[in-house]
Image 1 (cartoon, each protein chain N blue to C red):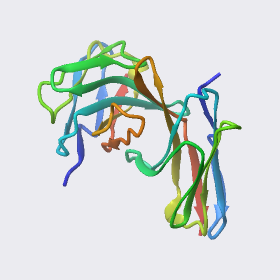
Image 2: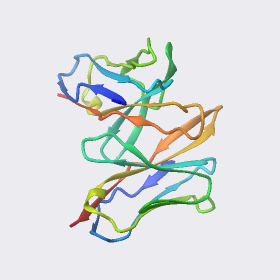
Image 3: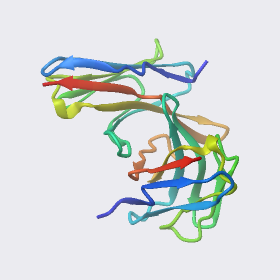
Image 4: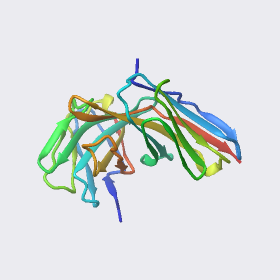
Amino acid sequence: NAGVTQTPKFRILKIGQSMTLQCTQDMNHNYMYWYRQDPGMGLKLIYYSVGAGITDKGEVPNGYNVSRSTTEDFPLRLELAAPSQTSVYFCASSSAGGSGANVLTFGAGSRLTVL
Amino acid sequence: QKEVEQDPGPLSVPEGAIVSLNCTYSNSAFQYFMWYRQYSRKGPELLMYTYSSGNKEDGRFTAQVDKSSKYISLFIRDSQPSDSATYLCAMSALMDSSYKLIFGSGTRLLVRP
């Protein structure tokens, strides 16, 4: 049982380049999330999805885009990469996103550096 | 003021010590409280989850919620080197017709052999 799988694990981008972080889950969870984690800043929500075809902005969506064509996949697109997007990105999923008891299953993270 | 405050540490303790990790929060609407453990270069994983006030115990771990003081704690008894990790508190509340989940910034714990 793989859970939440993210690729790539590491990537170095030049300023202005674009890339897509891939995320897939095999738990049939409806809710999926993208977070970024900066040192000392905790996890910040970028985008989330409550099901295939439905996405919404989180706390820090600028510079990112997402799509959700299937239940399993939730890719995060970075357009025109900037140094401020250097961070560790985590994809997560849950079956209870619409309730207070929202327990997330996280992927291992994608470490992105923009130079 | 951050909605959830957590001391970043690092907190260094000898093996076998009792560890106390804490978070304070400002929004009295928070009702669900969680602790996640994150090992280095890994994603967070759920450790414990509680609803409203009170204590919850799971093996060497005890989660405590004091809603009157807006304060939550995680106690680790007989700490082991394998407990060395960053511990993130998280809490959720119903806001604007949907549940909002907020994470603390994490406390790094080092248990020395």
